[in-house]
Length: 267
Image 1 (spheres, one colour):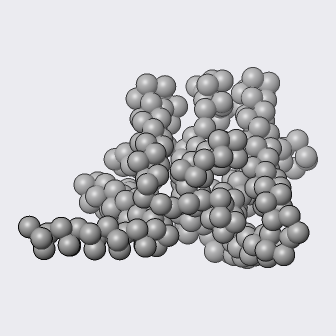
Image 2 (tube, one colour):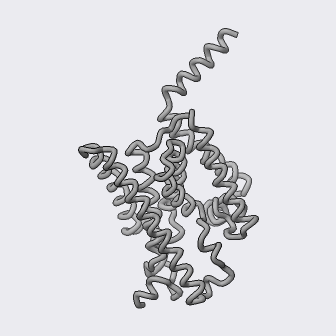
Image 3 (cartoon, rainbow, N blue to C red):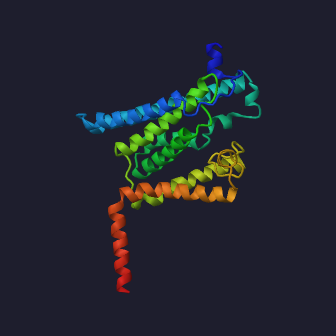
């Protein structure tokens, strides 16, 4: 195998179960260690605001590098090499982010430009969920005999999702207050609409948000009835998002329920 084969693939690369092997564990450990390091770097920096912005921008640009490089290589595989695995695909398939993990990458990149609390919240929660699920049971990246560029792309982009999402939270870019919850809900709603657009209109992906029947998680990993899977899917997302808000905004939550209880007692 030469460098070009490593870069663009198109060669035989047998399956090899790599879940929770040394590389998998080391990637997770290094990702968490970096977040801890960033926390202390900012804590003891002379200019905390400048330092944390440099960290987040560096992470966002790293994600952009991998997203741009992967698309350039997919274009080479499709238009120059005409590899069989690219048959039936087109430029739109290359350009549009999919599945949810890739969408989260672009959300994180957009967050450093938008600079709004609700969008930091959305981007970090979306990316953290994707990265945790990936590292809990990676379906790509670690699972080949040869770690080609696209294997490393999967591993490193998911590591960057984990590092960047946690860094946004730890370095206090996020602000989980229920007053901005409607805007966050709108962002997630638009993300799911985008997923439906990719499925039913653009025909780019069969299940970008992992909620369609007979998807990989439902049919091959959990192996449960679709109705139960969809219920668990909704409960997971609702509970996951609200957990951050309930913990971070607990003072206002307690005040709300105290006021509600007082109102009922006066009726």
